[in-house]
Amino acid sequence: MNDFDRPYWDQHWRHARHHGTAPNPHLVREVAGLAPGTALDAGCGRGAEAGWLAARGWAVTAVDISIEALTQATANTVAWVRADLTTWAPATPFDLVTTHYAHPAMPQLAFYERISDWVAPGGTLLVVGHAQGHHVAEASATAADITALLGGWAIDTAGDHGHDVVVRARRTA
Image (cartoon, rainbow, N blue to C red; front, side, top):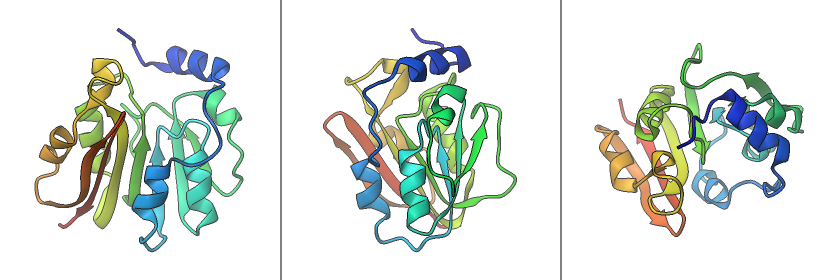
């Protein structure tokens, strides 16, 4: 069992060598048709997705708990925030809230529900996470579990893709 707290993530990013600088292909596919606006990358790590979004005209805020990850981030057009996503909350909602394999020190589904509150009306939530059975249980979910949290949302994508679960939904109200 992992605590997924600040010391855990600082240690992870201090020694991580397996994380590249290319954005997640699910992000590239899922947001390709969206008009740029404001975006939040929740649990941004080294910021590959945040940098990709910013290069395409999005005004990006990228949040991560680890100073080790943020010091390795390179995009200078992104607003970088070191914060614990279990307690931090944005001042205003975003047109796009996205997260990629983030798992903070709270139940995974509660985290997804929390960040869904940060999506503006008409905005998009994109969750790319660990599919159940492919990572530790407390950091995994199914598409069905995630979409069940989003009553009243328009679900555009929901599926398990090998080791990944991908859900893209639009806030309708």
